[in-house]
Length: 487
Ligand SMILES: *[C@@H]1O[C@H](CO)[C@@H](O)[C@H](O)[C@H]1NC(C)=O
Ligand SMILES: *[C@@H]1O[C@H](CO)[C@@H](O)[C@H](O)[C@H]1NC(C)=O
Ligand SMILES: *[C@@H]1O[C@H](CO)[C@@H](O)[C@H](O)[C@H]1NC(C)=O
Ligand SMILES: *[C@@H]1O[C@H](CO)[C@@H](O)[C@H](O)[C@H]1NC(C)=O
Ligand SMILES: *[C@@H]1O[C@H](CO)[C@@H](O)[C@H](O)[C@H]1NC(C)=O
Ligand SMILES: *[C@@H]1O[C@H](CO)[C@@H](O)[C@H](O)[C@H]1NC(C)=O
Ligand SMILES: *[C@@H]1O[C@H](CO)[C@@H](O)[C@H](O)[C@H]1NC(C)=O
Image 1: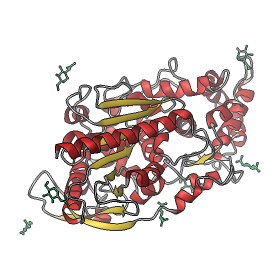
Image 2: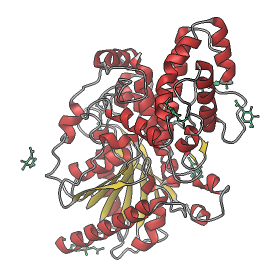
Image 3: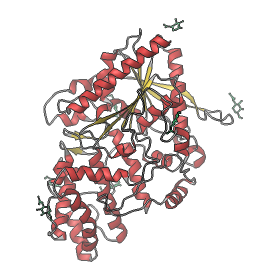
Image 4: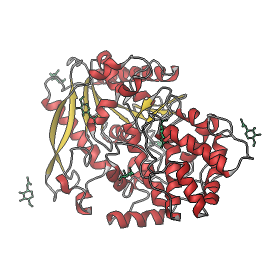
């Protein structure tokens, strides 16, 4: 049953990207502050005729790739083009929620472009049939998506009056950040540099346990006994759910919409809890926010307040604490009638697409051992994963391809890429956290969760992210200057 676990991780990327923003709602509770910026989000929508297959000549059809433009602050003389390399979801969502780009547009006099990733949102190569079989899905790859971006950039420079000589900077978060990196690496003449925020480009090759170690660390530092009590909860669930009476108690205690009945359902329940803890680590932001779910500031600390017991407590007491903790995530608004173990977040638009990508070239091994992390031991099993992929899509993953096509560890021949990571973000485990050269720069955001730097400015931002954003803008200016002098 590796699949649940694997699938949920991909979901994370999606959600995490969705997690970029949504601050409009959340700020309401604190004070009115940066809200005005959100209302200024406005864009024009365009569609570009894109080759379905960039790498072969038999399939010669085209499809409409959606992209969004905002030129409100653009100075055609020298103003750069900030190009968001869309990831696995509706591009309007990323556009609305990548506050950083909107916040810096004026200072940089930049044109903003948000390009949708094929097979997501409205950019469907075969319309409604796109997901219907493996033949149609065959063109859903990161390589094709990168080629889409490069072709679109060339077309924009050609057709957009004034854009011909302007520098383009790729920006992305999460998988979008991986694409920004790779766009700079594979098409260095298309973009002068890239900002890759929380982009786990090495998740394919790092030890499989790293991700969950970071999750665990977040809980360990957020409250006394917090991670050790979560670690103990799995066996407590097993003991309690061994009887029919216990199952009933557990279902009631957690206010589940559908009472647990079978061992499979208990397994699913534990997977749901695990996913909840992971999501929390990803969105452990310093202010009240609403992405995966509406949450308080520093939600992991709030969760851990319910989990400081000593080792002597009964299973029931321990699980009562877990159920209180989980409600912080699912019922912060007080609106939840019951807890639904089939749901961990909203807006996961690209779930199936990302699942397919992970079943082909984006293979990210994940495992837990229950010692270095707070989860039940679960080894990485490539064969089982591959079988699940075959059952679902009729294709099998190529385990090593991502490393081969994107260069693995040694990418030092490339240049002008910023890798930003937050030390609370589990995805930093696959990120570039040390600078590799003078122009391959790593920035670690102390107290940062998943691509905090791409979010809108906030008065609750820690010093670290304020500095990070300023540094990023400084690099942008340097790249633009560099490009202007070498033109
Ligand atoms: C595309 O392929 C079809 C079928 O093979 C062929 O009839 C058509 O001429 C091709 N179009 C172009 C632009 O190559
Ligand atoms: C993004 O914002 C636009 C304009 O405010 C709105 O029409 C659109 O529905 C939003 N998209 C998402 C996914 O929130
Ligand atoms: C762009 O650069 C080329 C080559 O230097 C020059 O001929 C052209 O006039 C420039 N275009 C604009 C719009 O500045
Ligand atoms: C944490 O657990 C230890 C060991 O069981 C216990 O001695 C201690 O009191 C607990 N801490 C709190 C804050 O409850
Ligand atoms: C959610 O919170 C509200 C208000 O505190 C409470 O009435 C309701 O029972 C809670 N729902 C669940 C499922 O815990
Ligand atoms: C639980 O979530 C699933 C998946 O989103 C949904 O289909 C189902 O209707 C939900 N159940 C309840 C009781 O809300
Ligand atoms: C990494 O690649 C560069 C050139 O691409 C090469 O000079 C260097 O020796 C390589 N480093 C390692 C550790 O392999």
